[in-house]
Image 1 (cartoon, each protein chain N blue to C red):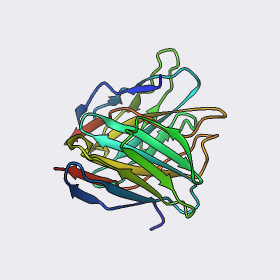
Image 2 (cartoon, each protein chain N blue to C red):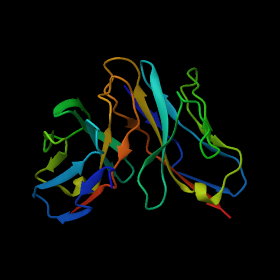
Image 3 (cartoon, rainbow over the protein chains, first blue to last red):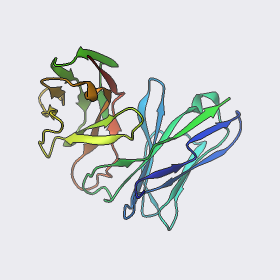
Image 4 (spheres, rainbow over the protein chains, first blue to last red):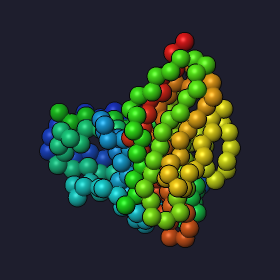
Length: 115
Length: 112
């Protein structure tokens, strides 16, 4: 499958813990976007990377961080987890750097449950 | 501020009835508008974008800059149209990063 892949699909952890979500973009895509989907919140944009560099930042908490590696995969790190961080985290990728808008291709998401 | 508003969380219609999913936006520049769809157990995927002016699966959407709206319409709903629909906005022009701002989504339920 050459689409966007996210791991893990499901994750259950306790408050105060730290987790890492991983995303591999589509082959050839340079931009990676992270979104959070929680109840009644829709899809909230967190952060975007393009070719290893941070490109845009949304409402991402200071407890959250992300990076994009030379092989273009990306990781979203969530620390000091709270109950309210329970959500579905989506990764998307696109081929362009954003100077022109392009279609985003989404992964299946990582469902995080904080107990 | 960039914002997308979908006022209906749930829209329920009977098969064959017309459908209109509402979307209003707030954006200071020139926006590009999209509709994304998520069918049950599938990934979120692009349905249509205003720039291409296409009709996909019988759906159309017209950008109304005066009313800042981008409503999604279909004259005759089918059961397979049941899904979650998201309206999204991105900025046009240089300097735009390509990120999309999404609305909260509307669940369309088409009853037999």
